[in-house]
Length: 268
Image (cartoon, rainbow, N blue to C red; front, side):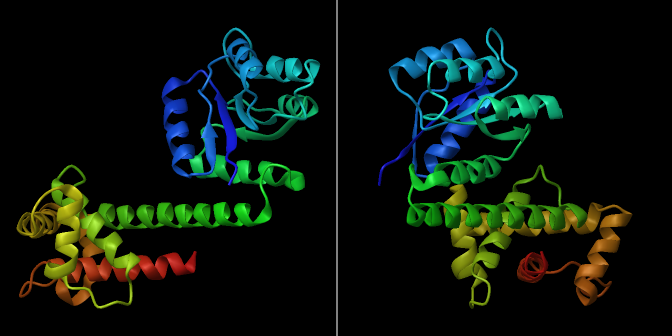
């Protein structure tokens, strides 16, 4: 498989580093070193042309629009597929970027998965950079990533409304436990034999500590939650929240939130 040469042209160094790491982790891209203004980009292109470049329109020294104009003058416009982006957007700016050869115009801030989706579109144009079979694999990977992001958001929201404090260790253990149960939904999963060891291995701790921290996190939510959290606890757990029984067990809590997460994701 021939990897796509991808380069980021952006003056935000932290953003460049994180996006580089994300794109490299996909396994389909040969990441050329990021550059941080138009002059650097032109100099870099003389050494090695990227197949696809993500170009920030607003940069010091030479901005993205001027860079696009220079690419046209030097005959690179058809060779380098450019995805332009900027936090400041109006119709004239988009029209100008597209007239100078930009394939897409994205609005910052944008999720890395959205950048990848547009890159998949670009590399498939005409079939010159990536064949359909490889694009299908990349789209499949993107779909899984988007599903996982959605799942993470749903679980985090449940923990928030139930009043689980995000600053305690048990919060992260609960989140990972629920995520694992969602991933293996429909299977018979033992808490002490499967889930706790899985969480312990991921966080470098023991099953006993995982169990203790999970219990502490749930106790914090039930003992210290506000009115809205108490309402959510009664609504979600029903019979488990009463004077006789008190809070749900670790297993009841994890199983209930995993079940609700699965059904919420199905309705999306």
